[in-house]
Length: 386
Image (cartoon, rainbow, N blue to C red; front, side, top):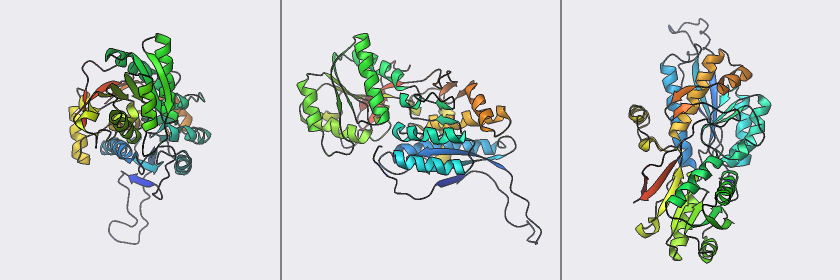
């Protein structure tokens, strides 16, 4: 998240390749065979801070894709190395981490969770010619520079806003209060939601409010929402603040529906909420593996490799690596521009479905889900995929 600084030190380099040793196999003084050339993919993820839960889940997905590629013989006769850097969802930390990745001669960047941390790295990777396959972040700010080297694995906030408005109306909402935290993704999703509501006339917008990340209480925000007589709230920020906002809304007597954006449904949002506080809590989400049919075999491979079930962001991170390696194969080289052109022409099927990109770098067929709180977890609301 914005304002969080990494507490970890250097990059975590995940080497998933079988490299030759330093000496001859027979122990003689003969010169060792030079290790084979490798293909390096870089990933920036929040491995520390309040979003580390999501970052670790995404890292595991990317590691599985690399491991499977290497087990199948690698790419272009080379093994693949995944280089992971911690961006802590902090813009300054992310820029430093991106510069570190560039120095390590990566063929492509395949990470990206918090849009606020990804946006300032655009110029770093662009200057180095490194194509970016952004696994999870989906703010329209990522598209603002109109770089032809940026490709989004997830649907944009404009598409998510349209999806959210349709579902909030379907859930019975008439008067909408929108709340964000002032950072890139939450703010652009909030603005897009307000614009969609006003353009379609589907819901009356009572307020668009901003709260501060990490505050101990959001009672004033909750009071303003109730005073405006909203019957549905859409919070577009992350799960830590969403959890506190829900508590303050319910404790103040708000009984309407609370819907959160995908930045909140992918974390432990519902922990430490009572049954009453969880009632009528929903969320717009990207891909939740347990709700996607036909990927049982992949989920079993993930469990065998990692020891846990795949979580939110895992599939997108896995598929981002698949897109990169497929493009490198078709490019036939590690030239950045050749790889970029190959990514733009992607037409494969991944775990998350058909993979391809529009001219502006957005995904041709994004998926969104509507989830409903049930106990301390989410369940799929019937008929919600897009």
